[in-house]
Image (tube, rainbow, N blue to C red; front, side):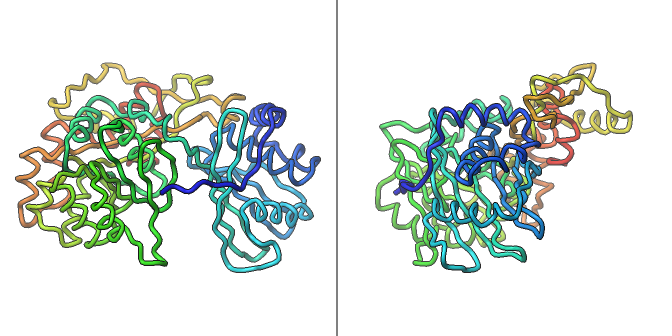
Length: 429
């Protein structure tokens, strides 16, 4: 079951207001932080990070000071440098918050604490690793309330949303997501679970670790040190009579086999697997030794995704792109099949963020998903049964049935002014 985090700090209304003001000038935090006590540094640093929707806070000692970096929308930014004499008090305070002894040194520490703000509570996952200049700290900020996760707000267009809704409304089968670490797979899975969560069904999750807390869902966490793996957990939890199961990741044949068997015996199974595309999920399962016939009958759909930065809505403006890039975009868009029912505008417009106070001069604020979804239609099943099937074969068969590929989805979002073409090419090309 999910574990409550008792340790933590409370950020006052006053610090919250100060954090909001400081977030307007986020790259000049040093002057403010060096003038306040250590405990206030942590409060103001985390308050500002949360205000700016930062994913991770990095605290890195060097030979002449302490560098503070925020990972904002997937990109690391230097936001402050503190004097060296701030390092040990800062490290000690974080260790105390995390429940670590301050007088014991070891190579790594992993822990958690919570941050309570006037209107929300954030979980912080702590990683401390010894380095050349001392211990480096990374604080991951996790909004532990999944109730706010809405499938409609993920950035799924109708051509992706319709097959997903069809897949999750089934009473059995598998919904598989793929993508690199940090691509939003967990958020997508929770949003899909949220969409079907009700008192008439039992949902159980197996996670590593639990990242969001969901009302009405039985959440469990693996413990590999004690032999409680994804496969072992899945076998045990099937005896709990669930309707829906979420398996954090399929890493081996054993977990894949149990998950597929579960999906074919009246359970709806959600999971992730390491692959670069929606089509690539199929050969990945085959590579784990899964029978093709079982696979095509078990999978409802596969989803691949990446996260692109959104153009700041307060400084968005139209921009021009070079003719070579424009021609490349036209070729990519022209390869979208007519079955996708997408109307491409005659004049292609593109946008960028000029940079303003709201986005800290970056030109981006927040992220949105770019997706491709392959529904297991009869035409796709037939292709997969080919003994020498490749990712490309599956992908082309899917395109012929109206699948919009991730790069195409990204370009369509750029045309709507949601992101830049540079960002789409950086992430999805």
